[in-house]
Length: 358
Ligand code: PEP
Ligand code: MN
Image 1 (cartoon, rainbow, N blue to C red):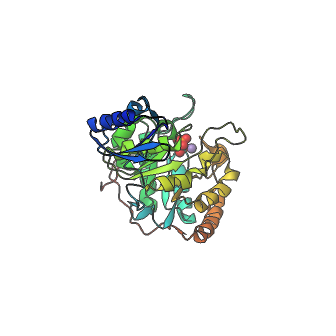
Image 2: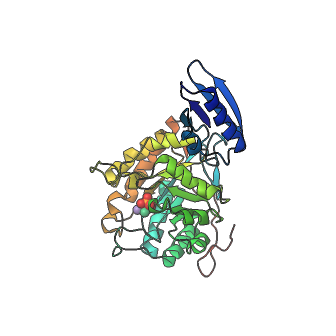
Image 3: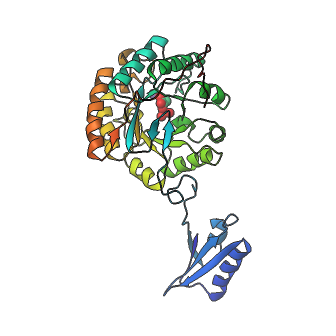
């Protein structure tokens, strides 16, 4: 942290600031400029609060130098983090495509979709079993039954699975069936849930809150990391703005901003970002061009009859077409789209849970 003194600050005021900082355990380094004196506070700053200095006589302002999100920050971890999920690498050279329905609706629906997205080249299957819906009267998801179908689809296709967990109580159960835990936009700042998935033994994809600032997203990732789980991905899924032409405003800026600020893999979700299947292909291509490490897309065999998010779901044929475009854009930016199939299928036990728990 740096304390910038007013041009009118007296020697006594400068001395007071230094004394106060040292009393709080910091070391001080004054820099005497032509107009302003600046005091750098270094070393152990755990007891130093900006407000203490902002209130002192002669102080113009304080400036934070280090990111408050120490574990998520690229400054403290310059190399990008690679998260390996059954041989699928997030944050490496390859761009990972995750696809599947918004909600798991039936065994047949998830298996059909899983086969179709694998055929088109997706390497991770998505599907919600616990759905955060605006109305309590809307379809809330199949719960554990949906997770069992996902595990079955996983066994048949070999595709690792991502699914949302909404409560602390459900974490252990969801983690038994899936490979990646999704924290939804509405729960970005559910700190108890974040602390709990920080102790879970599964990678976590944390979605940006509907009105969440990028710095807030990073602080929320910090909650997971500081609880011991270093496998966190950050997901841009659109934010609420004054614009009503689209469901949300897909913040393309967030992708390079997150890549610059953090070493964690960045996922783009143009389905929720736009709310409109026609806009999903162009924004998916744009996200890869902007540096996204992965995409998460909604694909449904019959979007018109989907129980959630049909408007933003691609039909399997359109998804396959998009995959062709993604391969070209990935190549143009020096990357490749990850391909499915090399990973071994993980058997499930009689209850539908993964037989081998890593
Ligand atoms: C979803 O992935 O279907 C979902 C509910 O996403 P979000 O939390 O971003 O709204
Ligand atoms: Mn959805």
